[in-house]
Length: 143
Image (cartoon, rainbow, N blue to C red; front, side, top):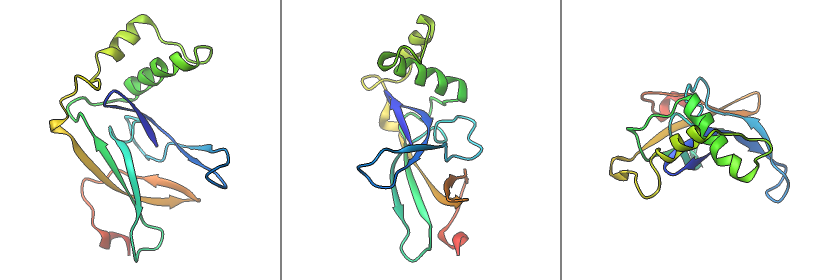
């Protein structure tokens, strides 16, 4: 649901397809009420179905640089700066914005010793995945 620039998460999205070898279509950001628009400042690395729980999945997300919070403005800036390189007709970033992106924690400069994980349940609303922030939760919440 998200890519990353260096170790910084980018804007979230989810997509569906009829088959793995067919085109995928965006169905939007699954992270409900996420002010960062960047997977709650993380990057989903794995999703698994909970055995014995009907339609309950858990998203495991990396938060490589928890001390570098991403908000919606920064997520948009990072997306435009990255996409401009591959699609300059549709994405524009100023030189100042590019400099801001280059000052974000990159692969060679991030202190990943402080990394942590975010584990959140995925529920479905009208057939679409939804991930809500929860400070704490347990499997029994989903009986």
